[in-house]
Every structure is written in C-alpha cells, then in structure tokens.
Length: 139
Image (cartoon, rainbow, N blue to C red; front, side):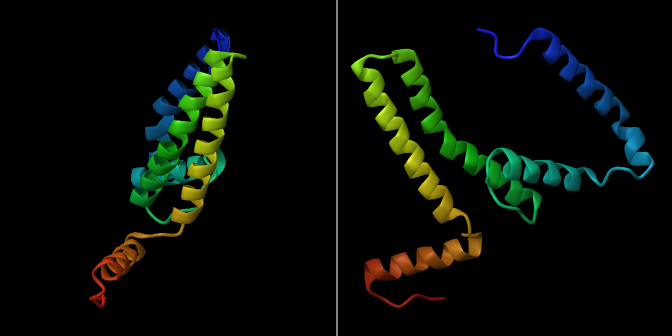
C-alpha cells in the first residue's frame, strides 16, 4: 500500500536537501535565529498546527509538549489500526469502541494536564500527599 507517491516523496527530499545545504548561508546573512530558537519554534509550530496544543515558552517545554501529545495519541492509533485490520467482524466493532474510549480518555488527559507546569505539579503532588497523610503541606 503506497501512502505517498514516489515522485512527491522525491520532491520533498530534494527541497529538504536544498534547505539543509542553504541553512549556513541563511544563518550568516542573519535570516535565521539561533539553532535552539529555531528548533523551539519548529516544535511549537508542530504542537500548534499538527497536534492541537498550545504555545510554549522554551525548548524543553516544546519538546515535552510534543512527547506528551504523541504519547497520548499512540493508544488510539494502535486501536484504530487494529479496527482497520479486523474489518467488519464483531472484533472490529469492539476494537472501535475501545479506540473511541481511549481517544476520549486521552483528550481528557490532554485538556486537564495542559496548564500544569512543573511548579503546579509539585503543589498538586504535595496536596495529594497531605490528603493521604492528613497532615498540612510544607508549601
């Protein structure tokens, strides 16, 4: 099964090679930012446009956002791939229901974890620990 025609793939590879070869020239002329800024921008655009996330402030946050989004999409991808393999059998409809449930759960997790930074995560963990021990939190 061919997803992308060979001539389109060859054209994309050719364009990427030209861009990679011209990157040093673009940088010398001042047309590109520093590499870390460029990578952070590319990752942020991938999160915004492809994965449906929100903007980030740093390279580490952008990389974490991409990893989190991909990690949340993997279970639903595998379940829907299994649905496509099963076809119209009874297992296919069961796998479709499992895939829809995983997609719903991962969307809920993505929405609830969206605004939690490391500092907020520490506070939430401290609150959870204090509720478990019934003692006041050290924050």
